[in-house]
Length: 225
Image 1: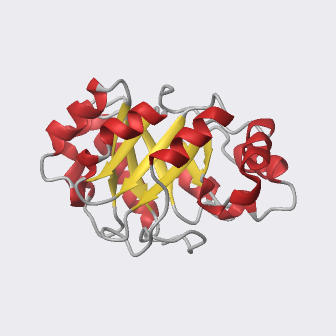
Image 2: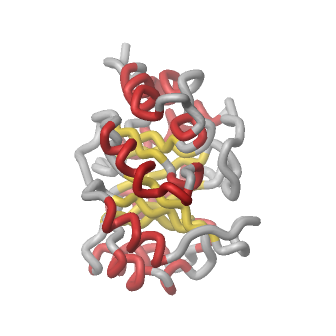
């Protein structure tokens, strides 16, 4: 994982054309993507079913970029070993689905991966406080997880500010990632609120030129006032 406070763009392959996945990944690399974000959904924690270890393994063979794996699943610990073996660089689990959070984060790190937690829109930032110093990544969801292409929840900006403050108060070196509705219309506000890492799926893959879109999103993350 990279150090905090430098802008990272992490395109989500949830919106990619899987019939041409190698070409899609190559375009992301050419466009300067920092990470590849992989959304794992089990149809239980969220109302959708997506990828597993085989997709992570496939993407790993196509790129050297870090694979940022977001587990929207119940009992996430059941996936850790397989995902690490498949090539995940970081794994983020939802606090809402992880009652043994400290132990689960420790296991992710034992496997050599960065350990992160995600907060749903209705989950308080304070739920991250007790483990903040142990995190490599804190993910604030700015849509309700389960589907790509949703609209950014405007009230999330204040939550992002509070998440940044919490990381500062706990002296955490975790990066602050935001996922949901990230586009040219929202990324600058989110950056100024304190985020440094941006998951963008629909905005990148629906663009006429995904490479140019990544550059445009990055250009909007300038020095904070």
